[in-house]
Length: 108
Image (cartoon, rainbow, N blue to C red; front, top):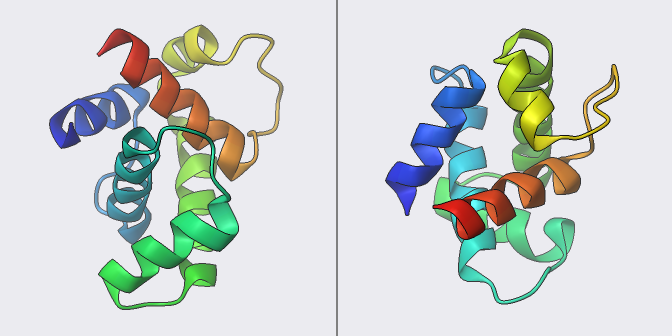
């Protein structure tokens, strides 16, 4: 599962040298293991924070910064395929993460 996540993040143009990359991949992994949508703030970020020995707020911020970097400098054609009617501004963390996770579950 992790290799599919890494492949998609690289295809999107995610900057791999940032802490947010690893944290985003971990969050996507947790989402893909869940049967239903769970609270990103109350459930997912605390789990990732525990694994990374940091605070949930830092996970949220790092993932948000990673999304911004992908949205502004990543593979624009790929983003257009995944996010129909894509606007100028990036989607929220939850929308971005769940869109990628559901795509990987359906097409992986």
